[in-house]
View 1 (cartoon, rainbow, N blue to C red):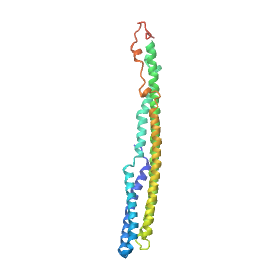
View 2 (view 1 turned 180 degrees about the vertical axis):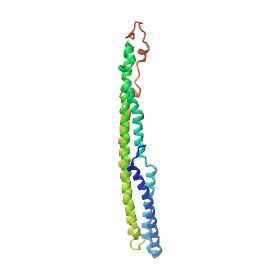
View 3 (view 1 turned 135 degrees about the horizontal axis):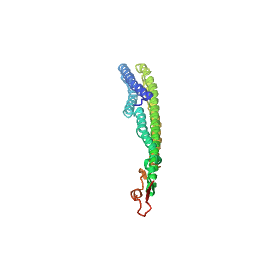
View 4 (view 1 turned 120 degrees about the vertical axis):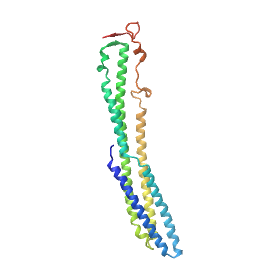
Length: 257
């Protein structure tokens, strides 16, 4: 299986950062509780309000990261699938196309006539169809690799944005435990959380746009008949091939060479 190292490293980094964020948030909560424990009751309102707003947004961050991991995809699997399609189907079809050439078949030198011509036409059409299969699988492999690269870019971007966010949240720990800085620290943490979620939304939209583009590319490939009229494998004119009587007076008469 192909391994996309950058993609896997980004996932590992984000997983590690989740634990760091969890630890940082626990310390922020502990600091806020400490402050609430020493503040006069009439001053608790602003702290609790700021904390509730921050806590809701941090919870949203955790939920968003969990959702991303649940639907994380696999750049390596995409690359492997592309390789398999091209190797197991495209390459084999190309090999068969090289063999299915009228001039190379023994029958080419055995008979002549309308039935023989129809047979030759069928061989030529099917040879072109096999060649088109190779073209299709090459396009599929290229497209899947492009999607894998886009997925890698998405997760590397998430890792960078998340790393910055976690570092900023760690920076709020000390202030959250200080009476004069509790509310400013919580408001800062709230702002950092909002900014990170906005970054996730931007990265997600960019990736979704790329997926739409690649899907359109694959859809276009799938609807191009080319050698496959009406989506069917090119068939021979069987009535002409079946009626291959040597001399019965019709157009399909044939003569051994």
